[in-house]
Each structure stands twice: as structure tokens, then as C-alpha cells.
Length: 156
Image 1 (cartoon, rainbow, N blue to C red):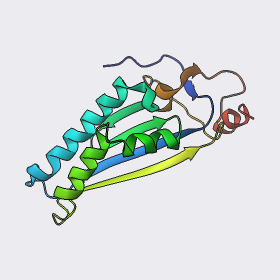
Image 2: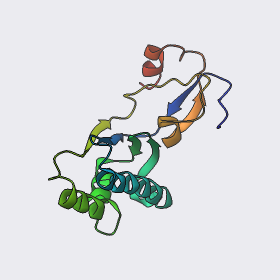
Image 3: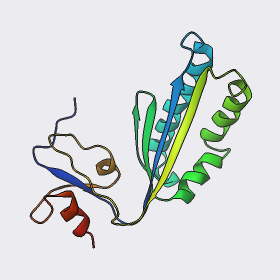
Image 4: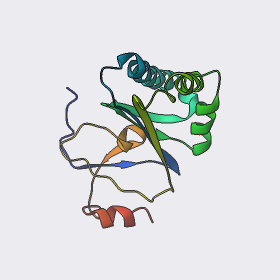
């Protein structure tokens, strides 16, 4: 288990960034042959992104049924998603061919958020480095940054 930071911490990141949430939902557990390839493809993509930082993915955390990613820009995310040289495009094509018309055995979803520089705040108490702190810097909360409002103001 990753050790927790002993202090109240926050994340800092330079410039704009993108938060990308993507997940799957198994609607028919017994249709393993439909959802297992989707789960495997997500895991392989997370590994590929870790091996290729030039793609622009700052961090990626795979949780049960959801992946949380931070990207340098929407352009980086879109370029990766549409590149036939990377894993996403072939996996998406395969998903559409095999699963889309299979009466909803497995569902996929995503949400994309553009975050402008300084328009975020974070707090990690007795937690290991995670989330935005993995994509940026994990720094102690100091004077003048005790509340969420103060953390927002400190970026102005």
C-alpha cells in the first residue's frame, strides 16, 4: 500500500489541462466474451499511455470500472484517440463492430472537462499522491491556503 502523506496537501499544475473520465458498465455479467475485451483494452491503453508521455497524458488511474486521466490538452487527447498507430482507435473500431449492436451487454461512457489555469482546487488529507497531484505537483497546504476559497484565491 502506498504510504499516506503526513500533511494536508494540495495539487498544483501549470497551465490549462483536461480531465477525462472513461468507464464501462457490465450490463450482463454472463456475457463475459462481450465485456472482458473492453476491460482488457482499457488496461492496455493505460499501460501504453504510461510508456508514451509524448502522447500528452499526464496521469492515468484505473479504478474498478472507471479510468481517471489528466491530459495536457484536448488536442493531445483527441490525437491519441484518433491515431491508428495507438491502441484506442483499433479498440474503438472493434468495440463498435462487435458490441454496439449486441443489445447492451456492456456500456462505455466518457466525460471530458477543460480546466483553465488556476480554476481548480484540491485537498488531500492523510492520502497518498493521487488524482491531480499525480499529474502535477503534490505540495503542502501553507498559510493562506487553509480553505477551498483561499486555495482558489492563491492562484489569482
